[in-house]
Length: 386
Image 1 (cartoon, rainbow, N blue to C red):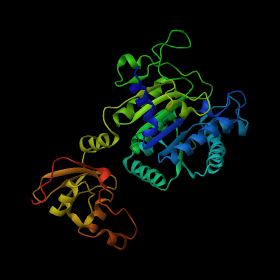
Image 2 (image 1 turned 120 degrees about the horizontal axis):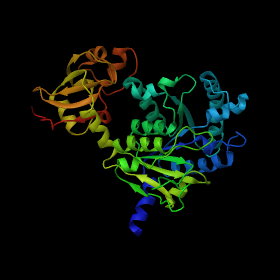
Image 3 (image 1 turned 90 degrees about the horizontal axis):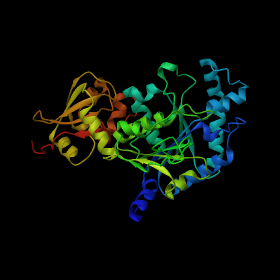
Image 4 (image 1 turned 90 degrees about the vertical axis):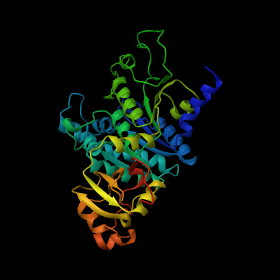
């Protein structure tokens, strides 16, 4: 392995502007006692504070609530009915959130707890609400600590593992990197627990059937995921333009180990998160309506700016906040696809209005943009003078 290639690997995590870190139950909770591994968690919070100090945005997807709650409530291992599972989650969330808050605030970092369900990342409007909440927290310098909302989710609407939840969060906020801390160093070409000569695969650029066949089942005490779910998560992220790294958390300061070129497996996308999101908006969603805009707004879109209500001349169709719409110029040319910030009834009221007038007009303070540039994908180059 060349020095250049090794240096490039070390820089991937340190240079990522937005990082999602998924931590499994088997790392957070001691299998023998059911207690929180506080010394290990303290080392990780040291690393999160270091990442924030160098300007990185950080989100944590943290397992462990159910395992902690079971011990707290005195539930045995044979008590695994859904209502017992949810009761353990309700009790454990308090313990888990308090531990994160205690350790991170001691390092000068503010946190917020965010509980998500599968519906929150599959339903477009709830997806948009969750995305807006997370991006606002990041803008305020807060570290979101995220978990699946097991207290209300049923088996039919659960992720069932936080690897995929971490990937959906990374996709949602256009993160640059997802870190999956596990009980193994990464993806091997054979089962390392059975074959002494198994070799770690350092990089994957395409998830082929051969790569997927290397995944095995989980053998951890508390975890619900295994290598299969990690590869599913990696695929979600690769499609979203986000890198994924699987590394062992069975050491103090596991993130520093990744940056020091320790053993791990990187899954590398072929495009950026921004490009992937624009392609998804442009080609994967069926428009629910159309916004007709004037020449000034068309020029603004070409310059990379957002669409404001003042540039909208007509609203066609019936749609809700977060739905995909077409954006058409004065000559009828379809210029862009976008996710609209207002429903069709409100959009009609806002036609031609300046952003500062929207609150009085609509009765509440909403977004300044009809479609924010992050939710807008140009299809053709608009003609400003059309």
